[in-house]
Picture 1: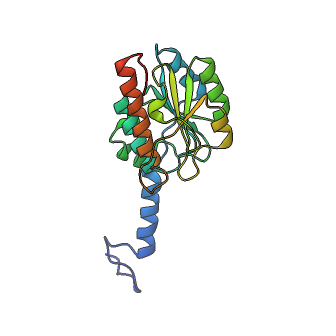
Picture 2: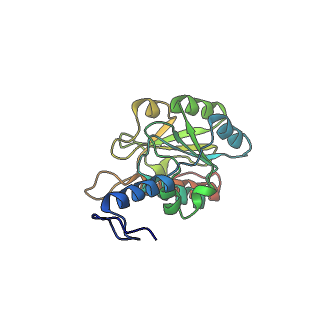
Picture 3: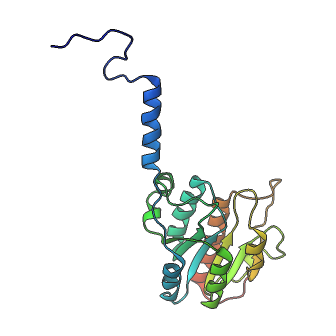
Length: 208
């Protein structure tokens, strides 16, 4: 048997602090691997297969908890696809999947290089693009959401970028009765998606 080496060594089973940190870092990197997203062509193929497409467009949402909550709501609302940017936006990570309670595995999720171009292609495919903006003059409840639709929501804090907003056919606002100016993007997504669900369920009628 070899003699025990001399010196200060951590006991077996209890790595030194720097070793524990390294292991934790490797563990975080391992579990936060991003799942590959669909591309623009695959997104458009999904849209083309629907009689009345229902798409959610996210302009640079970066918080994985927000994206996870949005995907969970999108799944419940029957959204056919969620699309966002490749840059300045979070993809499908384990955090997103966990927060979505599995919805991230079922809702088609696309990331595109040029969101404005994809929006134009969605228009060409027959979809109406409705963006949420505090500058809108009509509320989401006064806006027709019954036809082929892409709802467009902006990023945390900044909202939609200028070009994204300009590419929307209509803008709508969520009425706010309190002192806070806006909702969290995941909450706003829920309000807008389920107003669309309500309208699409009752069929063509005059909105209030």
